[in-house]
Amino acid sequence: MPELPLERWINPEILAQPAYQVKISSHRIKLNQNESPWDWPQPLKEEVLRRLGQAAWNRYPELRPQGLKEKLAAGLSLSPEQLVLGKGSNEVLQAILRVALPPGEILCTLSPTFAIYRLLGEQQRARLVEVPLTADFQVNDKNLLAASKAARITILCNPNSPTGSLLPLELIERVARQTTGLVIVDEAYVDFSGVSALPILEHYPNLIITRTFSKAFALAGFRLGYALMHPQLAAQVHKGLLPFNIDVAAIIAAEVLLDHPEIVAERVRLIIRERDRLIARLDKMPGVTAWPSRANFFLLATPLGPRETFAQLAERGILVRDVSDYPGCAQVVRVTVGTPDENEALVQAVKELL
Image (cartoon, rainbow, N blue to C red; front, side, top):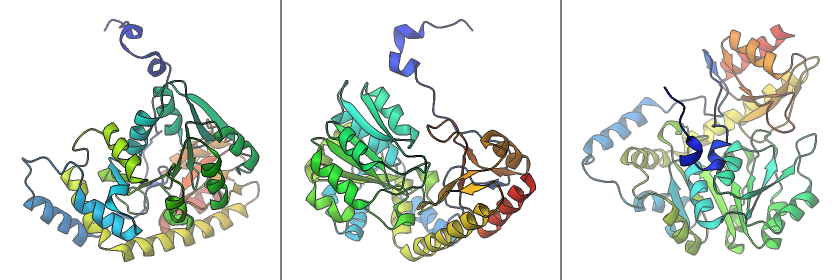
């Protein structure tokens, strides 16, 4: 087909932007996307399907799903007006930047961090200010405070992806206190860290917390996330979302799953136990470094280097994430914590590599 004159039709920042991609190969063990290693129990799936079968498929879902918002808000001791729902927390982030980040304004993030922040910022034509982490993937408080002070929006992933490192709540509070802009704390992995900005939300009207059902709640296939913020901010962020953005299936699934917090709590406990056990075992191997993490994943370096490590594990049917193109991550892969059997297979595979 002929080459198209895309520069006439597509915004220049989009043309210059690489598409978000995930390297996939054939695998029997999938440890590359920070998903839950367990699907939902069949009886709960059947309950979701039963309720979905009773729903009117010819009607639009609720514009803003009030029942789901009320159930979520009650569990967080917030009002439903403080919640914004999206198809994954990424959609809510996109809406926030759409309504609050004019072209040319500063978007402050860490580096390395979740790649979506840069992609969304570039699409808004923002000026990106990225605060480098230290060699051991910790934040320099002074640098973050200086960079965020004049930022229109600061996004802090906590625990951070892909590093698994954790920002202290006191530092987040200092950022929120001294900046004139908004501060977004992305808590996609909060269930595995035990540290949340929720206790200080009411004290800082410029603070926004985003969360997802994709990780601890094992609902990645339904794409559902949410944000917590001041009600007046929420009213404006809703304008950045398309109407009826949450489909009936996602609403029903979330409502069913929220009735079973004990399942989530037990799985989180097992993942944390497996994470710490796995990191300790791998880190004892000659030439191997497994970094401490407060998420459901961790960084791993072997003497083979990241690309060969990825390839050799893939040959053994184990899929991890090569993040060596992230700043400061040239020597590492990222590994999601799996089931005990999957984790044992990873340990044995790394032994073979050595």
